[in-house]
Image 1 (tube, rainbow, N blue to C red):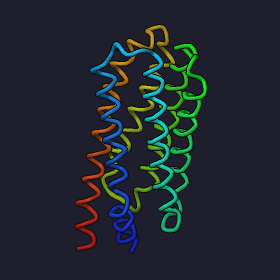
Image 2 (cartoon, rainbow, N blue to C red):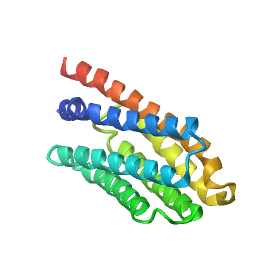
Image 3 (cartoon, rainbow, N blue to C red):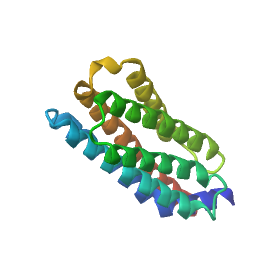
Image 4 (spheres, helix red, strand yellow):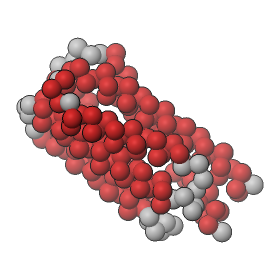
Length: 187
């Protein structure tokens, strides 16, 4: 019974997980292949990504609220992303260090929410490793930024790009896993 409900949720929302993965990959490619962009362009790119990621996460959470008791973890993750995006838009003239700390805090907090979500969904879904790995990478990335702020934001663009690409690929992997899993459960 729980597997059928989980399969229905997965079938309905896997495209949003894939969309989050594509957005992360696009953000990563921008960070990697246009490293000379101005700091303001980076702030705007991050703000747009965080807002879109947060909106998609909130939509997923609200869609799952009637079928899952753990929907609020994804809602909190989405709200954190939206707040990070709004802060980046509201204060474009902030120093690189402050932006670095906003990105670091966002990465740590959303990573924790992803891990908690994956662990809490273990009884409903299988193969949640991709979401756990994405969350762990997010936390590691955020901690790295807190520990090494002196490296500078422009040099961090490479790390952000690689992180975003890996994060996006893992979300796409999870979306495809959910597609095949939901098909096998409902069949």
